[in-house]
Amino acid sequence: MTLSAVVAMTANNRPKYLHRVLQTWEAANDLHKLPFIFQVEPVMPMVMDMCKAFPGTNVVNINPYVYGALGNPWHALNTGFEYGADFVILAEDDSVVSPDVLDYFYWASTHFQGRQETLAVCSFNHFSNGRSNEVFRRKWFASVVWGTWRNRWEQLMREDWGWDYGGDGPWDTRFVRMMPERNMNCLFPCVSRSQHIGEHGTHMDASMFHKLQADSLHVSPRITSFKEVHPDG
Image (tube, rainbow, N blue to C red; front, side, top):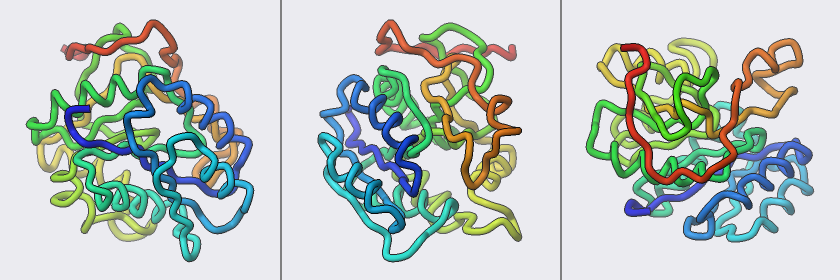
């Protein structure tokens, strides 16, 4: 990548999901070019061992206590930027990715770095709305595998994180509210580059699972160059 970038993954206590997810990351194009960081909750030795064994792993941070579903993403992102990255991709232990997911993040992070109105690059699109090589921006945020730049992290996210469900709400809700207030947006692929597989989790149960999955996940061909479109006119 032109920008220095890392992948930072949160992991907890679901080794079956993690195994599937890591298989898709191993198949990601050019993964070997990026540092891979794990932020791991201290609850399951099997998960810790899987993270340590992942090819190309640079850092495995075992949390001193359980940071939780709202805290662990902050620590993963912060670790990525402390590592020296200009752009951090936040991955999850229950979200599989397309083989060209890093091609998408590479293109997006370089082309939109200077577009300060773009808060983050999201890889998940619930409903496909264009071709596989097309991207679009909207005043919305999807937390299933996403990335942001150092200046957005330091200026807008790090010190105004949502650590609980009270007050102004959790961090992803804050991002959604922030965008219309500041006239900002996020970038999305017209065909999703990630898919949530965690049927059971902190924010998911079987009754919600299928309704909240992407309707399509791009697999092939590999796409390295994208173009922005305006599907809503």
